[in-house]
Length: 291
Image (cartoon, rainbow, N blue to C red; front, side, top):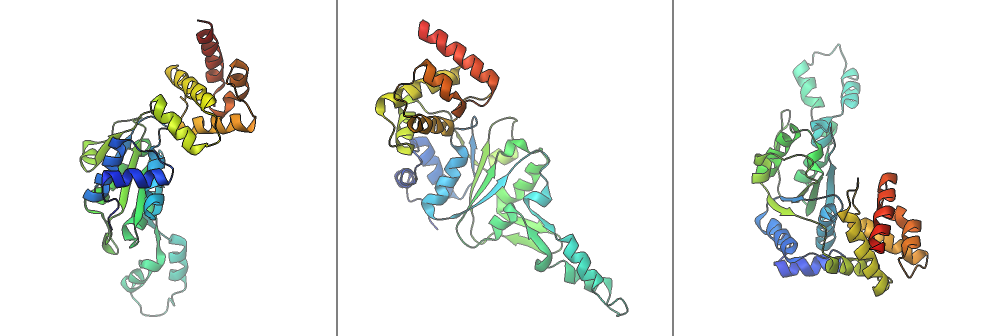
């Protein structure tokens, strides 16, 4: 399968499914598919890293398989595990007076019937076009990266009881990281790399108008300028692109046509989710307006 025929094709098809990709993003996305290399996306939360993987899935018609990473993730949750309850029932069902050996019983219970596949193994075994999203990989323990190396290097997994499972159709792999910790060089070496940041004002207006077509141009400009000022503050959580879109939809729902101080105070919960951030934003935006 050819994921995209060129960077221009990637731009056009991603735009068609609602993802406005700049030149660097479209080019790297094209290369990830063409070279069959995983794509590592790094940057602050809320800049469209996860959404890019979803957009590739929508644009190409491929199914999305997602591994959501978190602290404590292990092989059983990422790769596979055996259905121990079902195995135990199968063992208990064996006639203990028969002269069947343990090795025969062992071979019967470590088969496909008792295997529970998790996202990594699921993506490798699929014969249909697949986008594998390994989301927030920086939240895992560093030991988990060892699980990824075999997958990212050869797109294969070794199951001791069954042997090596090798991909017949390589998935389009996207790893995302908020850079909460440094990933190992071994993982980075196997990937193409792209840093995504918050868009400039012009591109963010384009995103808002694409996602919220009923948004008035004047209030779109006010909203983008205000979100930009909020991102310059020392907040617990800066506004993401998705939250800016939510704010735009909130303003339309309330029929607000001017983003003044009162409108900001009333609707700030759509974009900031910490009380301390609310207090700082109201104070700083008020001071900024008086200068």
